[in-house]
Image 1 (cartoon, rainbow, N blue to C red):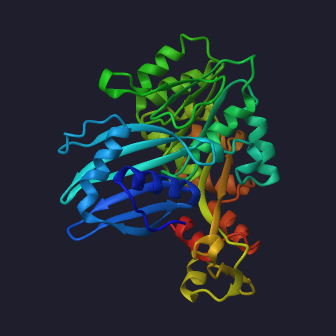
Image 2 (spheres, rainbow, N blue to C red):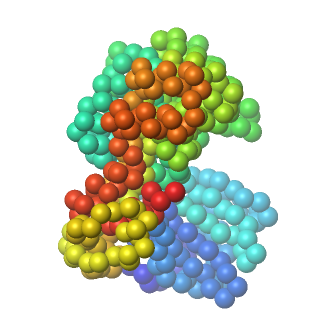
Amino acid sequence: MQTQFSGSVITQVDQIIQAAIEAGASDIHLEPFEKKYRLRFRIDGVLQEITELQLSQKDAVTSRLKIMAELDIAEKRRPQDGRIKIRAKQGQDIDLRVSTLPTQYGEKVVLRILDKGTLELSLESLGFSNDELSAFRSEIHKPYGMILVTGPTGSGKTTTLYSALNEINSEQVNITTIEDPIEYNLEGINQTQVHEEIDLSFVNILRSILRQDPNIIMVGEIRDKETAEIAIRAALTGHLVFSTLHTNDASSAVSRLVEMGMEPFLVSSSVRMVIAQRLVRKICQNCKISYTPVSSMIKDLELEEGFTFYKGKGCEKCNGTGYKGRTALIELLMIDDGIADKISKNADYSDIKAKGISSGMKTLHEMGIEKMTKGLTTIEEVYRETSL
């Protein structure tokens, strides 16, 4: 990876973007401080410092990016958002989402890299076990009901939803999405972006979509009772609805809908499946070694003795990190009759989770341990993502 950038500001900006693409970064951070101008890339979900740029060039770099994103270069007091479209050296089209933020020492700029060339939209690539993949595939081919994907920002929810839509997309169905923002263009799918400033909200778009003869609807996120209400009604009246929530696990997603004010019997009747997911970094197979981790982690994760633990030592192929790529931990809650009965009776979250486990659900923690014992990821990654 190139860590020194030279030439004109225009050339340096191009070099930075190209280096980030080649490194497989998802985000570029340009951060001004009192005595330095820091460049960081987010690679496999973790920020890494790349280099320090010349502090004297921070305004010129920001202005160049604003010009590329068609933003107001004179406005430095307020945050701005824009988009850049470029073609990488490898020939693929790249979208860059640009966000500026005024800080104490100047404007910080973050670029989200949306590389269509790296977008893998097959269900097999998501990280499901064979049984989970079979169950998920079965549910997304049903004509109605609600499927929820939950997890924090950056946990792969959008990729899971896009992969599901890609699987069921055909000339026989009308698929419409509501997104904030639209991350990737999906061929043959009607995508609408939220614009709150003109009152084009999730709920208002959803009302309009229901007059568009839809078969399948994706609501980017359920944020309030009104959106939840209309989405659930759609799922109960012959539509297949996909959406996301921000909760810690699958069982708490159901409880969140009830907390929003939804009647428990409506939730139990409409929701067919909830998927909670996290992304963990994979061990670099080129420098993989066995080792003994910190004993407190083993204790906190309640691991039995006898495990062989692995990590990456760090090499050129993984830029010295010991990790290369990511894989998903999937917690899949099927809403069977027993769980639906619990939900309809407004059972506590812990009761729903216990019922799910007794019905065969593997928790995020268990999936993490499973992938760790297979040598796919490290105990540190499992601890980071599942120790709630």
